[in-house]
Length: 239
Image 1 (cartoon, rainbow, N blue to C red):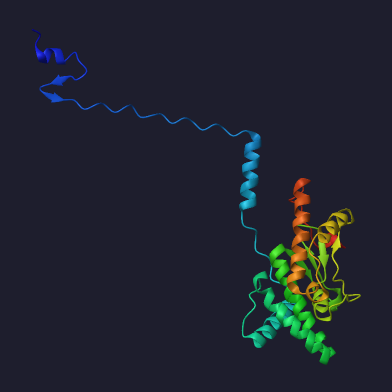
Image 2 (cartoon, helix red, strand yellow; image 1 turned 120 degrees about the vertical axis):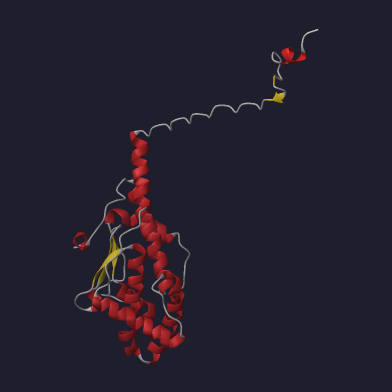
């Protein structure tokens, strides 16, 4: 009869000195090398990194704009004991102030000359920070402009402030949107699709910034589709 130990050395359960040998671990797997990026992938990756990079901070507003913004913040804070924060989030508070300014202007029409520039400058600065642009704030208030940087769009925010209180178009104040003629038809169609509003709401700051946002988004989408999304404008392009 064969020896049991000898038989065990040839079987599946080998014995050595009566001890069971543990199974040996498999050799470590060699990781596969990632596939290389082709030229298009590298370009897309670079574009994604560039779009994710934070934009450089804007320059402070011109001193005259800053003074009017500060005045607007004082007016609102003294009325409601709540501070505007320079973002679209608190523009509804400015709406309330505008409604009261409308009533005050009915009693004292001259008050619009004090309140409207402050409201318009503050609204314009919120838009500049939100959408990026450049102020032209020399000369009389009716000649001021806000020029946008990443789309072709300009207007006078102080004119918007005046119309917010008067609830009517103010000739000569240039609150209307200045657009590239080739883009006007598409923008008019986009604005026509927005919900209709009565005059009381139409001229409010929150409505104005919603309109401007819709315009900017439409123009940006158009530029990206045309492959010119990186084009920037400055004041010289508008004159």
